[in-house]
Image 1 (cartoon, rainbow, N blue to C red):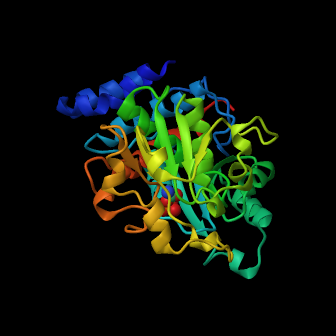
Image 2 (image 1 turned 30 degrees about the vertical axis):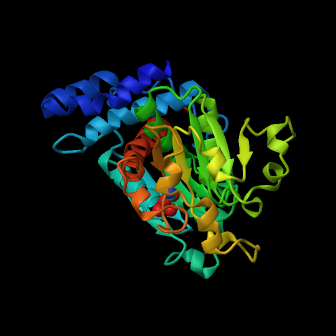
Length: 356
Ligand code: CP
């Protein structure tokens, strides 16, 4: 499947806006029948996108496109996952990911139960493994999991028989965010080969940056990471990622000067400083960080004329991103949130209805 073909599918809902609800419904069913077995998907879990092929990424995105058409119906409901029980197990705060996974499951007809660290037996000292065994014992078919410990979803995948979906683990991976970011970029540009994507901000603590690094380079984009040295992983700060090195990171450029890195960029993704993970690190003041790394309109003028602005949220407007840029016509930040719903529907559908 080539990127252009998928991009056509992804952009179709825009052109389909003139069609009647019935025609749109028919179009979505003709592309990704939601009531037939999924025979070309063999993954049981979504832990990260680092091992995903280009075709696998595009399969998720084209399924999300069909889901976007479901969302466009007057009654956005389908029984594709009727009888399935999904637990949202969130040990860390979330607005976008948690609410969109909950809604995604419900739109697909599944029973969705939310469990969080506070208010559950986790507060009484129950371990993660015991919690997972408990959810399994009450009939979890899938567990969508956010945890502060990097690697926790891999432990979950070894513990339960059902599907595990990583909704963000520590500073390690956030695969559905990377997939929705790829969806937005393909919708915008059609093909990412040679497209320049700049990711700027707190790279060190960003699971979003880590997952995006894999998916964007797999789709052919040229990725530049921009941060002050204390906010870069040590392998990147030392320049090791630009050579072949044991961590086998995909090829990326690393810059400390945003004004240089942004020249000609097709997309600029800004990241907040994750104060909750700083643990006493010495950083420039907020004012100094903003002076050197805030995405301003002046800086956006150095990017390509049709460049877009992205942010995974939550934003600290006035720190990593200027208020006017966050709400400018170039901003795709709200579109990212909306795409998150279709992407999470697609992920639940493929994993649960797939043949793994
Ligand atoms: N982007 C993201 O993961 O947002 P939430 O923390 O609100 O889920």
